[in-house]
Length: 348
DNA sequence: AATTCGTGGCG
DNA sequence: TCGCCAAGAAT
Image (cartoon, rainbow, N blue to C red; front, side, top):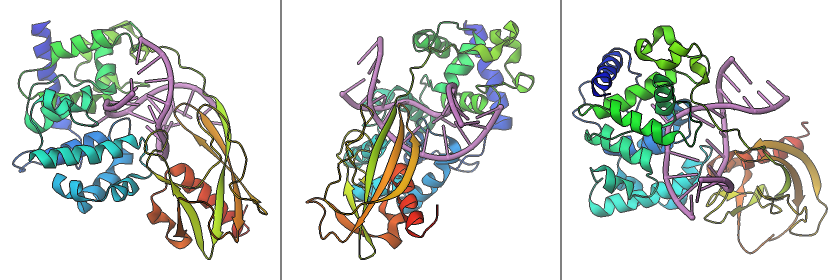
C-alpha cells in the first residue's frame, strides 16, 4: 500500500499544481502563508455547504471582521444575524465561542488534537485546519474524500459503516509532506471530476489506479444506507404589525434555528404540527402559506396577520418592516415575511 | 450509534 | 417535481 499510496499522492499533487481551484480563502501565490483565521472560518462555513453558497458570506465576514480578535469582540447577535441564510445555526454559535477561546489564548493552536478541542471543530475540521493552515500531516476525510477513496479502492461496505475502512485507506495515501495541499486536491478532485453523479473519469489523474472505474460502474461507490422518509409537518407563523413594524422574537439558544431572530409561531417542530392557536385574540387574516424543506422534515407554514395589538408578548421587539433584511431572519421566516408583505400589497 | 440540526442547486 | 447532495458537529 505504501508504494501505491505514494504514487497516488504524487499524481494528485501534480494535478493540483496545474488545476487547483482559485478560492477566496486559499493562499495566493506570493502570500507568505495561509491565514489560520481565514482557513478556520472557511472550513466552518463549508461544513455541509456548497462553495457557491459560502463565497458571499466569507467575503462579508472577513470584510467586517478581518481577524479572529475582531470576531471575538463582536456582539454575538450581530454574528448570528450575519450568518442568517447560511443554515446550521449551531455553527454560528460555536463560531463565536471558538473565537472567544482563540482570542483568549492568543491565537489558534497548531496541533490537530488541540484544534479538535475547540467548539465547532470535529474530526474533519480539526484535521483540515492542522493540515492547510499549519502544514501538519493529518488525515482529512470529508464527503469528497470518502467518495474518491471509496472509488479508488472499490470499498463496497455501505456508509456509515464503511467509514472505518475509508479512513484507513485515506491514511494510507496521505503523504507526509504537503498534507494540506493533498487534502485540498482530493476535495477539488471530488468537486470537479470525481463527482457524485456521472464522474468524469476521462479527466481524472487517478483513473488508471481506480478500482471503481475498472468495475465499469464508478458512480456505484460509495454505497450508502437507505434514507428514512421525511415527515410532512404543518405550522403557523404570526405576522403582527403595528405602525410599519413587525413583532419579532428570538428563538431559544438550542434546537432548530436556535438563537436566531424569528417570527412568533405556534410550536411546530420536526416532531409534530403546530397548535394553530394564535398568541392573542383578534381578527387574524390568512396571508397564504410557504413550503420549506429541512433536512429531516418538510414544513407547510401558514402565515396569519394581525394589526392593532399594543404588545403581543413579554419577550420580543418591534422591527421596522422596511429594514427587515437587517433582522437576520433564517430563510424560512424570510420566506414567510415575503409572503405576508406580498399578500398585504394585494399580490397572490 | 442514531438523530438532529438549513439551504440551495442540480439532474 | 423531487430526491439527492454539499469542505460535518454535537449529543
